[in-house]
Length: 459
Image (tube, rainbow, N blue to C red):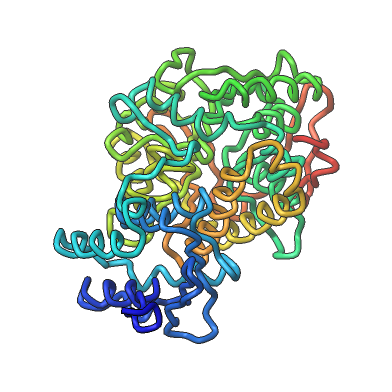
């Protein structure tokens, strides 16, 4: 047979279409975006204007074969065998189409045969996992494993977080009074709002569980005259927080320790905040978390829990990009889970506020900061981690915007003493008369919230 008369080998796109047609009842065709393979052939999208996924080599198929979910897609994306000709913003909403998709063992066997036909052994052998993927070991939410999980996320580079978060160094949802407000203004407003809800007073003992780089501790000590203690599991965070406390002249009035909330024994505190931390606790440990707070708080003391919660009823899965690459062992629950534990744990619920739309604005600001400092960020953390963080920020913004998840501030009071909360919610958010060691008591106007400039460059 002459070369001219030899049968032509099917294109990668043709082989892929044949395989996808045979699995999941054909739901994978047509794909929600155009797919271009390494031989130049393409699978057309359902929408002709959709962006294009570029499968650069068969390693991407191997990743998807061994983890046919978010994890496989993330691995291929992070190591570069899967690229995108278009914007991530356009692609992430398309995942809704496959939210309930489940592949049977027969489906996976058919896909393995198709991958072998497409790329040979490289398409079916397990490829190396990206180096930045978390490898959790030990009992879930044990002290040692929690420390490892926190280290994975928070100890990559303080400089990287400075680039992303800006001068306030606050890594939780900001509080915007206007969508055009700067991130610094909104984050300072959030710190101030927490202090007001807790009715902080000069001389009180204040505890911040999961204090990050110390921003709330610094704000509370500086503006409210409290004796502030922050705890974190990250040594890198604690080192920078202590530097910031010293630079603010607050040594002796504010401190940060490397400590788990389960290890703290020096209560009672008058007021306690936990901001963006309880997501690391785990559903099975929420009761222990509340009991620990109760033991550390005086009767009548106030506790503010600020955290992300699921809005959909499905429990989700651990096989997610976020769990493997961003927040190992993180768990989201309905806000009613922590509220129920608070009620069972001898707390009276006093106030609930949703900040869902505020987190969309916050994430957009963080992404803009990261993009503005992309070269410096790349030098700090490397290409894989930078790609992971951009995907995390964009995906999280979409999840908040589409009401998959939200963020709530829950204010509660421990039974056994007067809570000293005002009659109305309007009064709750008013600026109290604050007496600090450096100034006589003054009444701050109700609408006044310190700006980033007045609060100090890094508070």
